[in-house]
Image (cartoon, rainbow, N blue to C red):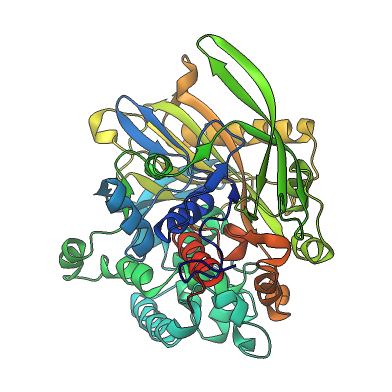
Length: 494
């Protein structure tokens, strides 16, 4: 079925489920390769997936994905083409919470470079010299892994036969390479940002995340005397001026996206010439002031799942899993993670974002962000890993309501410690979003070839898979993998 040199006919009807970074970037790259009968179906009334942005007083805030690093080559290439602008974010600070002799908590701001000079495994301080030596060693070790980790299909190439040293937790990898001195530094982008404890997360995930282009600016800005120079030469991290979600919205304007589509059933009949993929759905249809729910059916030649691949999502889509898909999806774990926001008066932050180090217990805020404080905007964001099970899918509404109440209580407690008080007189200054975050598997599954088996599934039953579970739940690796999928499986480029 080849036309114009492509492995798959460029006239093929392609359905993509999910209008997050995975779905939209896949549609984008398919369009670049001449595939124009591509339809993206999204259940929400917005695009962006885990990229969610709000605008307050003309200023945009990211409640999901936020930062861009030097490593975001493919994402920035798309952004330049659609005209999405970025700006340089200011440096970080950190928060330390200390309990006095009478059991009362106090909080103080301190430089991030002071906070990371702490070994969370041994609970001891780290000397600056030992930290810098470890940082240089990490750069060297990561450089040696470039040909392995920086490939878009890297996970499919890692197992206990090819790379046993990588089929371990990141804590194990750090300790095995005598890099404990960097543990607190890694806790900020990894644990605090929702990817799990260093003792749990598989080493390849973190090594993919903290590439050379990401790690070097992290340490270069704090090098004595040379730090200010590196700030000018390496203006990272950055943010999208209008928010990450709005960048994807600009992408969606150049693709065929249908919002508010509630899929009832997906039927696969790979041998059918007329309808290999049939999708029945309900959607909202508005005519002036009239809003109706209408039903429909669409036929496609290929299906791309750019949504979570957990068992509950297959059930919601009315898509019967094959035995191979069940074996794959049953092993996926997620981290329940939430963002809580308040308009906070009386609290001044020295920098726009502050992780809390040493890391407090799960269920309490792990980071605080406040952009545009210098412009009088006190919209404040609190990052919290919920105190829930790893799967996060077995709890009922009452249990989740209780978790939300506890998270908000802990957030208000931290606000008080920082000398502020939340203004809840208007609903727009208070939000709570819970994300089913970071689809991943345990190190032992990587060692047993989980991702090689997942790659072998690509194209079976005319179905393909992109998104967080196929690479790493970070925008740039997702986009790179989407491009790889299109070039490898649709175009046939090796």
